[in-house]
Length: 188
Image 1: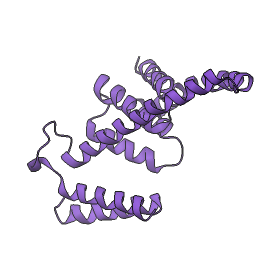
Image 2 (image 1 turned 60 degrees about the vertical axis):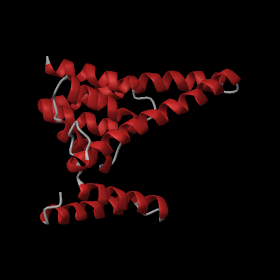
Image 3 (image 1 turned 45 degrees about the horizontal axis):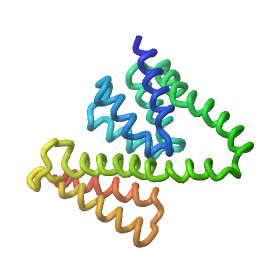
């Protein structure tokens, strides 16, 4: 039964995660944390971090990690396949349609109208993750709940990425080292 639940959950994620991996993060969180309670909010944040750092699409990495955690190797295979299956069919169908009708203004309008929705999904996922990091997953947002070390790491990483265009992998490694140092000093 759990394998069927994993498959159906990740088919839904694969079907509705328009816009790529970042857009899938809130969908994965809804299925794994809120609906099925396979992960805690903290475990989901760890999963999102690992899925981002490892090679490959975030949604597929997330499906593999969740499946492995919930039902071992068969779960990883089933969840990953469920995540990939809708894309396989949809992309094949869309490629045929796009090749035939790519010059139509209506198709160009539809594609342009999807962009704001994708930006909103990515923004919502980013804001949710920021709140998890900054306030430790607490429902009440207040200065006394703030995780100042994590906020400082976020601000430094954001500044370095935007201002100096630093390498994202280097930035993640430096944040990991900074988080370790802050944790050892008792600031995280």
